[in-house]
Amino acid sequence: MNRLKTRVTAIVSFFAFIGSVNAQNPQQINVLTTAVPFLRISPDARAGGMGDIGVATSPDAASSFYNLAKTPFAKKDIGIGFTYTPWLKDLGLNDVYLLAASGYYKLSPNEAISGSIRYFSLGTIQFTDYSGNEVGNGRPRELGADIGYSRKLGDKLALALAARYIYSNLASGAASSSSTYKAGTSVAADVSVYYHGATEVKGGWNFGLAFTNLGEKIGYTNAATEKDYIPADLGLGAAYTKVFDEDNRVTFGLDFHKLLVPSAPLSVDNGGPIDIAALAAYKSKPVVSSWFSSFGGDGGFSGQLKLVQASLGAEYAYQDQFFLRTGYFYESNTNGGRKYFSVGVGIKYNVMGLNFSYLVPSGSGTTRSPLSNTLRFGLTFDLDKDENSSSTPVTPTK
Image (cartoon, rainbow, N blue to C red; front, side, top):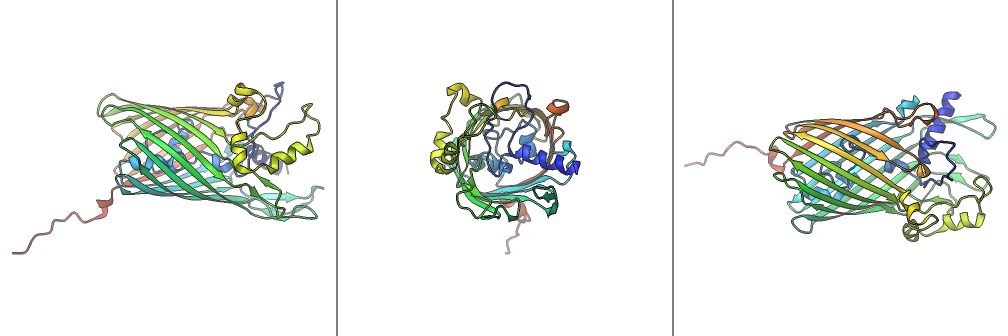
């Protein structure tokens, strides 16, 4: 039973993005919460080794997870990637994991199509009623699948659009006397822009802007009014590459992310009842209005800064075959308090590449991050269209 409680607590804590927050902090905590937060897990081992940056880094097979507009600038015509991430291993959970696959195909030097899928398994959970009686097992699982199109608007600028289908099956059965649980579904879109100023000879700056998960709310019961926001996000990124010679280069990147989700109403006395009317207005707010109202609320500009997540990362490349990576992720205590370092390595041989990343343990005791010791394993393939064609010359007949 203790193990069951640990599993449920860990998953609920992750879904609320509570993280490791000092319980003696006098600040009132107002964590932005959404449904399907698995869409915010970094699903790529390369990005995971650099503190989860990816909005403005060089394009690869996983670009659709961060900024799809990067793909027309990819060196190869075809890119395919797979990543496996055991999740919350530090809490002893062995059956919670994220699987991700992605790829792109360049239709021409100026345009590309792409697709990706994420599957998140929460393992096996023992459900109980309010009296603590066991009522059966469940295997909550979630999925996100998308397709996209990207095109260059010039020599250094590209735009991309993507459509996403979201499926979330967390529970089944009766939720109350008037409603029952069901799998939640939603659709969303991504819009992204990428400026590719870095060159292979001199390096330079890349910049990215990505609006992701812009879509309708998701509900888990047959009651139409009980729906939750999905994690619509605004991402800004910059990356600078310094080329030392034909064998050595280093890239530094910085990403900022802000959820386009309004803050839920807080109790006036930090523990008392919440205004029912304010809560109803929060839940009934139209999706498009919620994106804009996410920049309002109490606290002014300084309060908005506390809602911004920041990632700083670096990648060293030798002969474009061996890679060393490191990074740092930061989130304010009032918005979840996740803070961690990450490291990673990559090896590329011919068309195949292997990537590994590791989340360095942080904190201790009750303040230890549940994300400590997280590993990601990635496999990539980079191909050209003519690599599978025959290279045998044809001898003309006389």
